Image (cartoon, rainbow, N blue to C red):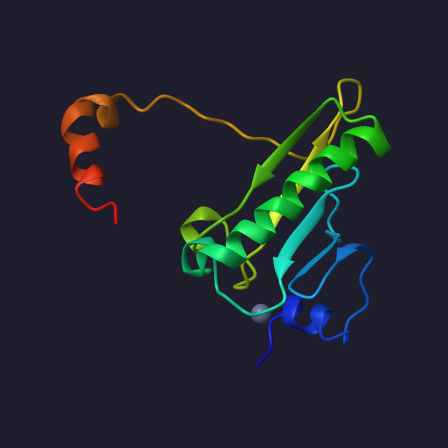
Length: 138
Ligand SMILES: [Zn+2]
């Protein structure tokens, strides 16, 4: 069964399009966690950021950057959050690679909260942790 983004790309579900070319589509997220909240997706189906081929991923990120700049200009946003989730534990709900581009405003209370709390137990061996990740970089 097709996921909802493949259906939007195929035109089977309507969307408020922000940008489109041969390989990339951007449209407003139906949830609008912030005003102007946009999703950027490759038209070809890949499950997530980590599985998307590099060249296509670069095109998606290029469009995300251009949309972030456009949101600042068009909506007067003072900041932008760029977010992509990989896997259910990271909050990915639609299994089609997508990048959230979410404009932020100084004087507007939106529905986006990002909290990063220090985790003391995870901080105990930073050198060992860095080495472990480093050794698997391809
Ligand atoms: Zn898909």
